[in-house]
Length: 422
Image 1 (cartoon, rainbow, N blue to C red):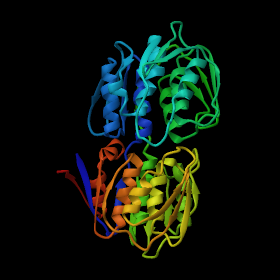
Image 2 (cartoon, rainbow, N blue to C red):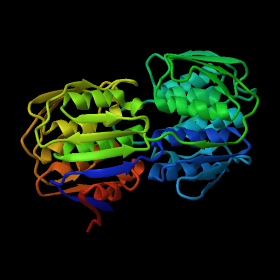
Image 3 (cartoon, helix red, strand yellow):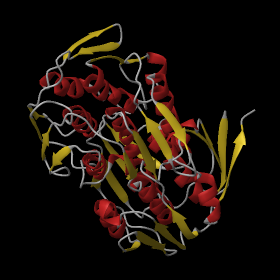
Image 4 (cartoon, one colour):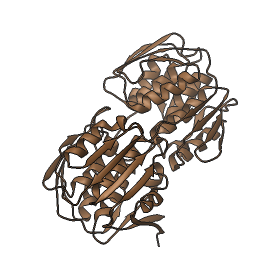
């Protein structure tokens, strides 16, 4: 197993290019199961998670090939048995979203209940309720969801009791081939929702108002192939921006991104005293030598502050001149990075869904352990600022969501490298 070694204290200078969004790419791959025709995805991230899903899709009978850098071709013309076994689903929650497309295409599916990062329960109840509303018969037994719709799916009005990105995406994936009209109420509005809708519409689906709380879908008989570019990864963009903000005397341009997708982050960073300059496709982050101001924030569904940037922002606040209160409203167990940041000298107190971060004058390198994807990169950010050496272990979490992280940070001036554990 690998670790990352960081010698902290360097300023970051230069430019970093953002790749396609992991959270979008995975659902676009699943959408390819809805068509007999070939689908080509460009601007694809090359990650452990996309590799996991490609393996599952091949198991289901789809042909999946990676071309030149950032390209993937998928052809799901000849699907086999619609069974997604535990061993291929347990590593990542997004694999569960094959259930809807398989149901729409084959009329039946057997999919293992998912695994993924241990950041909260994240039940799939809303996914299953949405599919049931569309006419699926679902039985849960022995760790699997058994679903049938022998006469096809039928449009319905589905009102989510709370905003769920995954359930909204899953309902969209199933409803595009359902008979009649579907309306999704209290739908998620994240940029990845709009990206999925744009691709499905380019394949011949009829989806209106994606990106709003009410989405209307008119079912069609079939979808055709498409060549589609994945939207850039706003979480990766925000992560590099926060890494630059954490290191005094830094000046970094984050390119090939959509800054308007992260207005809540830029506002929080500006309150902390960071110079943030946005354009249509890039953002420049400048940080002087002075200490940062503390910032209170609360994670929210988009367009609020993203839960996937909460750990990284906490790492930033460990060195602020005062106390910050960070409240997590999306996942109930997403402060596991707190104790690891404390090993570096941070002063963090967690009470349920609220963390109080009292800024210290400096962090000191130490061995730390990643607990989930976003927590792992928060430890890297903290290590970039710490005096001495920080060793981050269990970095397979990082490989699930960040491509070329060490190379990109090295190019910006960081002293960071990957090593093999003894």
